[in-house]
Length: 201
Image 1 (cartoon, one colour):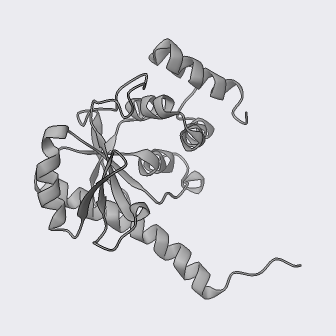
Image 2 (spheres, rainbow, N blue to C red):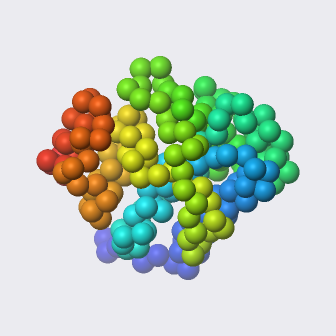
């Protein structure tokens, strides 16, 4: 059968999906900044922001918004974000802010506790909110983006399929090169070196 051409409704849904994620990031960043709550954008949106600085055509869209928050700021963040329509949930050991009472977990802002290990056996803790910088894009309000080295460290620590994919994206645009493994402890350095040696492996 010949491939089916995308109709206008499917295209609109694709565009709307991307816009919803960006809107979610904007609302969270604006609310936390207004309340002077330190945070940092991490995960796929952080990778996309870094990649876009080099090559917009290499940016990969993501459905999640992941943010760093310090544990002692979580209660205040719950109050602040509820005023922007978010609903806090704790499920399966994960803290998240659903985008409305009927939203699904994939329509959420996922919280990573700053400077703490995400999983007990992790080789390194998550970045701290102090390891961030303020950036401005053409699709967002100014927001606090985790700096590149701690972002790479987090990706090497998690090292799931999507983390390796994100690391390859950073390698492909030249943000990570052969000098980078020396920045990390031996186990993380070995993971990065393996990707540098065989990006497609």
